[in-house]
Length: 244
Length: 49
Image (cartoon, rainbow over all chains, first blue to last red; front, side, top):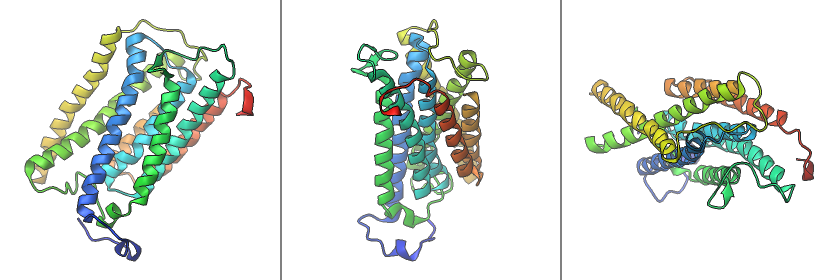
């Protein structure tokens, strides 16, 4: 790790060496991306499996989900920085505004059953608000933890931070899987917007489509993960060859 | 709507390519997302949100 530190960072108390703190931060960022992928997987399964088209506010919330992903992606590829978390917080605030709006819309009328099916008792927009709040709180806590910033981290691909080849392979490959899977989900969401909305605004109450079936939807979602795993493996091998 | 996701695609590509102006584009896209949100806030509801 390079030694680009500021005076204030040098004097900050730490209970963990900066290099280890960077590794822990990376793991937390990767875990955050996989958690986000889980939330997106639920909504994509409903869309492509059950055939439940997303409403306009749902699409805005999806945009907020991708905004949350920006911070961890930049942290993993550019290095751990507080401003990357700040971007995620801003994205989560925008997404939370959309989900709060939708929650209020449906609780305003006591006879309103809500939009779409409920998952574990809550509608997806309620789960989305929970996700956005967790993202805001999580990012705030990680900004408070100063130690990772002292290492001057340059990202996983420039400084894997591990010595053993297997450890390097795992951290780089898992990171790439998460990043590429997010991109694949973005492509799926972006492409599916076209037939529903065209190039303009989306209809307020889009008609349901014939989906792939309950399990078919999950297979489609997991297929995205499998493709991401293969692409990540190819990238990692190329990266390792270039590094050697 | 489509523009939001096209911009996210450019942003993700820029993160992979280390383009320095990406944070600004993120803010632009968040503003774009907020604009789309306001265009769909047409139904009057309590709290006037």
